[in-house]
Image 1 (cartoon, rainbow, N blue to C red):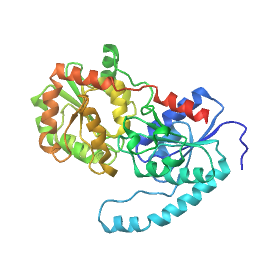
Image 2: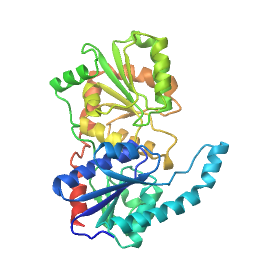
Image 3: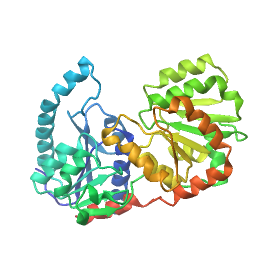
Image 4: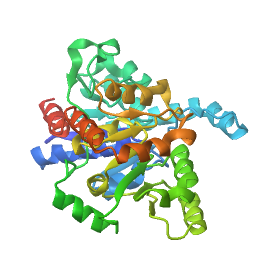
Length: 372
């Protein structure tokens, strides 16, 4: 067991960019305040954090944990039958990690790996912080809330899920460099992606993993791209890249720029006049910080339908539009093309969403971590 001669912090969770990028932002903020702090990430084996966290300069170890499969296929059923075994292995592995690293504090950002690690932390009386990104709390965080020192949230009204005396409204941590773009920054962003400054720019993103519905909507729109002077910046995800490549080969020369993953999302936001997106909490926090007019298409394939709750929290503030996943194939692109030329409505949505921004969330959470 290592001695605690300086701050030793475990950050657990992941699965999607919505969990991973806030976690990295918290780690960066901790390092800014305490350069000597030793930080270890704990993620799920085979998930994208095992690649993204080392790329950001941090150590990570993986647990053999997995989530519940919602499909009814034979492979899905078999995977679900193995969940108790995976969970037991993950708890045992988390126990070994905690014993070896001997953390002074732990942080859970949501995702598969968060549960076993923080369960062990609670058992070992190691103080921990929960970071709940969504407006509708996940089951793991609700179960762990009783032992948390602080529960950092991005939406008001979270007392329905957590003890009120533990809740701190911090907002969600976001990637660095995201802010409302100046005219010069927009010009530079358009140049970065090879976009035409004379056309409106629509950013379509299904998050770090892509979104099948949004990808199909763009694919179906390709024959009509020349009806409007609009170019599309399309983050289609790993599984959507094949569809995108085949579609663009079928319609050569269309003003559509497909990317599997966009590392410089700050530039993508700067280039965009309008964003069409899923309603993940991390993405929404970035749209707020960037002051972007958005149409949200919440994913129906998430626990507790939390993306719809996230989007509705903005719609109620007149800070975003919502199209359901079911309706998207019929009306999404038409709605986007109508809105992108309505400058007064774009301005209203942009101003309202920016009012909801909490750009210093990572620094706030880092201070609370170091306080513990």
